Amino acid sequence: MPEAAVHLGSGKVRELYALGDDRLLLVASDRISTFDVILPTEVPDKGRVLTGLSAFWFARTRELVPNHLLALRDDGRSLECRRLEMLPIECVVRGYLAGSAWRDYERTGAVCGHRLPAGLREAERLRQPIVTPATKAESGHDENIDAAAAAARVGRARYEQAEAAALRLYAFAAAHAEARGIILADTKFEFGVDGEGTLTLGDEALTPDSSRFWEADAYAPGGPQASYDKQFVRDYCESLGWDKTHPGPDLPPAVVTGTRARYVDAFELLTGCAFDAYLADPQVVLR
Ligand code: Q0N
Image (cartoon, rainbow, N blue to C red; front, side, top):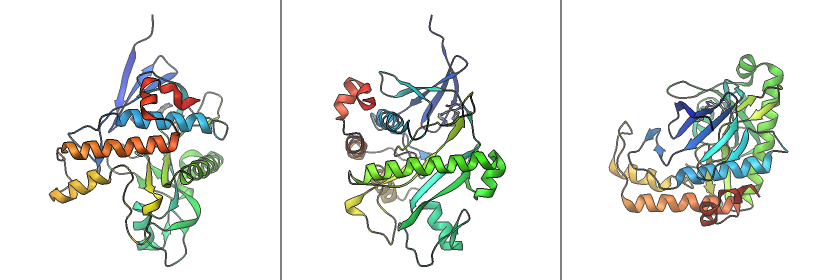
């Protein structure tokens, strides 16, 4: 008899279940957040797009960095994973100066201890990608920390190993995306350690919820960039003058349809698979 999945917790858009003692099930919903608020309207198939993308990247980077993926379920939105001991840090890799990194740079000229050249503009490409660790806040916002603070949390050798793994993953994925017209501006990785002590990539990876994707053709440094996936939602919310506190606004059908189409576009460009083919048989992204 198959063992029951025991619900362990909810993220903003994902659910986590235990499958026995040593496996987990990560289930991605169709919920969408903007300005850190979950909206009342879902985007159909968003969870399948994110799960398919994660599975695609896990399959293609397993020789670069071991990861927790065991199986992609046929519902297209659930990943069976190896249970790890997660490190209490996030590793963000940034190839471009956006978000909190831009704000920190403007204020201090540095990001998480990386001193950057003077005169950079918002969204400018960095000469070398940097790793900017952060603490995982239980509630509220993650806090940027420097490499020394990250090393104090996980040990210096482990941090250096995670930093190097994160840079390898970013270099591979950013080159793949750039060749397909998408800029991978930055992305967040979460690593754990398996029973043998091997550093292992966990969580979701290289999805629009854990990354900034920009359309290469529209890239114009010197200000904020349109988000490949969520820009219709942000523009609509801004047009309402909503104060960005809970609860967020309902989305009109045209915004939902347009946003779903953007997620599907990103999926098809990055994986090279038709999304209909993924719905018919999710395993297509693993081949
Ligand atoms: C784990 N989180 C934070 C689901 C993801 N392979 C693993 N082994 C042990 N623990 C975890 C994983 C993974 N992945 C990761 N929590 C537990 C991210 N969550 C947030 C909620 O949705």
